[in-house]
Length: 480
Ligand code: GLN
Image (cartoon, rainbow, N blue to C red; front, side):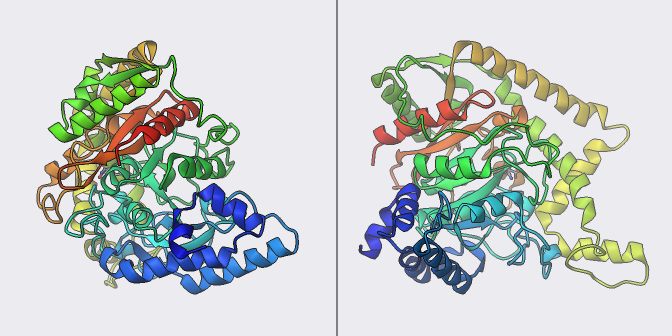
């Protein structure tokens, strides 16, 4: 098979090929590595690469298969993992100077599961520092660029994972999504990104940003590829206290179920926030579902208009607490000073970037005596109210349709000096995190400048199977 043809194979086809010895894991890996060697210097999707380690791993998988072993459903599939997910073999930085030089002593559960299923880990991908951002420009190690246009951002914070999949440096990747960080970069890079139900995927080994919102999920070239990864990484983990006591999600068998008879609600209030081109993409996607037999209508969820404000109180509040552990004593960077307090101040002043400091200050302020009830407690009330808004929508619709990002990829630097403009990139994605429900971004064609557009399918908690069947239908009908 030619390298080009190898790069076109789905995750399942690669694994089946390697398991049945019609393909070799090593030859698949080399096709991806060749692509990476040409384009990665321009894109900068990785913070750490281990091509030699990946080669040794691929050879080992080929040997195991030839001995009659079955390494699993991701056998020989080259993958990448966002660098806020810990890996024993690699330094893990979370895109921050404060963790420089830290080597995690263990693998995250999701990494264990990928490797346990036969995946080949190629490297760790770039991200906004501690996953705070929507463009990957807040990485302490320089931005990632969008493979569709190198002057544009890939989105964020899982921009490295999205770009690596879009540029075919790996077959699939993991990201984390606290307020849209899987779905928004997936949309901007023209790939599929899934934020699963809160509690469905273990966060043991995910460097926490906002613990009531964070979820790990897949980014992949197709809905099926994402579904295969989701089945592998989901399911109960006793090492994560927030992990639901449920089996792994079963989503692959029903991908071709279609949408006949399904009630699809188009979230008017979110479409209204998008550019005309993105709004018309959502419209076209809705019409496609209608052609395929779904009942489509507009649904009002006016509560979503308050979601962004609530998110930017709750997420920084939780971050200010989670990031207290980076004290210059326990991990990574240590800037020496005469007293312990001075050491902590010096380390945190040098180690954290501007956006992370902004979040810590915002969060500390929102939790401080005197402001707590006006800000943090009020934001939690909005969160409850938003949940009721979605509950009402779920009485009328089986899935909801919305934009993923209000616009296509913006230029590097365009929003980096205007935090609120950057925060507005998340207006369509934060609602699902606040209510703990799943959502997926699926590519839906391109805008006038040939930049990808993503549409979002939202579903009630634990309805990933239906959600991804709708996503698969959209994928089939999407303009190319
Ligand atoms: N862009 C959002 C933020 O900056 C979401 C980030 C995320 O999902 N990790 O908080």
